[in-house]
Every structure is written in structure tokens, then in C-alpha cells.
Image (cartoon, rainbow, N blue to C red; front, side, top):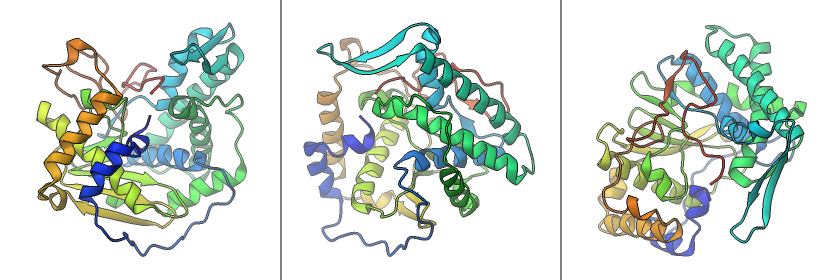
Length: 336
């Protein structure tokens, strides 16, 4: 379950409504970059990868973690070319399965993408061809991501539709990287430490300085639903900072709508000063406890959250661009 799915839970949805305006939220944005074909969330996920890659290139000290696709590959790599990996529901029903041949393809895709990524982020002036090549790699990674995010198995992730590559590149060209990056803290695809596990797994797109930013690649923004998701991220960020003061203090939450080429930024104090805020925040975690009960040993003193997606006892660390990367960095999980 994603944070977006979590905010659609009836109890959480009703509680969050107390922090939302009564009237419709009208952003006044128009579609500037229409999709070239009906590719669903594929282009959006690939665009997210490319934004992070470009920010890594421009900000060598950016904090990064293992790609979601790498987490999927790490899960199935042992059976590459051999057997079958299955995800089963509690009743034994098979929800998704990956055979050895598909696993081997995934391993090849991720290894090739890592090689291209390493060359790209080290290049002070990458060519248009290098950017196009990496966009194709991002589209392949996005196909593997669906295994983690939706338990969907793409048996041929190496294929790339030219229209999708052009779409990603046009979106990237219009991106205001000067507004997304930060010379101070820049954390790409961050998690909220132990707080992420409290909601079944959660990661954001960018923490830039004191701003938590989400990327949305959609034809028609849904600001009311998007705001619910931002508030959930805010609750998680506040809880992470409460257990670990080194976690960034979030002052601004917002979304960059890539097809509209426009950000939507909101000051946090506009919500935290509301009389209902503390109650809604408490209700959010109370409901999460019901949906995602923690083991008994975790109830009580919680390990402090770390800015690596883990807890005090975890070994994986965030990496800085330019550092040696491996398939075991970060803390992305194969299932949510």
C-alpha cells in the first residue's frame, strides 16, 4: 500500500478532511506538455528517475539510496536462470511470480542502467545522446518498479517506446532544477526511517533544504487528493524528526506538476497552527497501527529514525553521488 492508497482509507480520508479547505482547490494550471501516448504511470516513474539522476549530476553531495528496481532485482536475483519466485497472499494465493528467465533480464537491465548512470552523473556536460540513452534506461527501470509498487511483473522490461523516451526528455527539459535542488541538504527518494514501516513502507521524491517535494506527471492535477498525500508525508517527517533531530525540519511541502511545468508550494505552519492538526496527526498514526500492526517488541521505545530509510540498528547507509554503489545500498523493500 502506498501513502496515496493509505490516504484513501475511509477513516484517514475523513480525518484529513478536517485540515482541507471546504471549497474546491483551484490551481489555475494548464496542460503544457501533453502525453504522446497512453502509457499510464510508466513515463511518470521514468521521469522521477531522470529528475533524481540530473539532480545527482548537478549536486555531487546529494544523498541517495538504492533504486526501487534494485530492490526488486535483489529479491529475485538468486533464481535468475533457475526457478520461480512467488509472492503469496496470507491465504496462499499467488499474487505475483517471476521465473528465472525474467529475473535474469531484470538483472541485466539494472546492471546496464547503473553503468550508464555512473557515467552520466560524472559528466559535467552530458550530450543529448547520453541523456536520451539514460532516459531509455529509466523507462526500463520503471517497468521493474511495478513489481514492488503494484506486484505486476513485466516480462520484457528492455523494450522502450520511442514516444515515451521523447515524452520523458521533453518533461526533463522543462524542469526548473534550480528550484528543486539545494546547495544545503538534498536528499533524493528519502524514506522516514522507522516511521516508514509504521505505514507499510513510505518514500518521498525529494527533500531539498527544508522543503519536502513530490513529483506528479499527470494530465489533470487532483490537488485535494494530492494535499492529503502531502499531509501524510508531513506527519511522517515530523515523527521522524521527533525520534531523530538530525532528520530535516520540514518548513514547506509541495508538488511539482511536470506536465503543467508548475510547482505548488505550501508553508507547513498554515497547517500546524490549525487547532485540529494535532488530533488529525494522532488519528493518522492510530489508524496506521491498526492497518500495519508492529511486532510487540517495537511497541514502546522505537529505534530512532535515520536519514537512510533505516533505523539505528540497520547497516544500510545513504550514499553520496560518486560513491561506489551496490545492489544492497538503501532500504527499499521488495514488497509493500
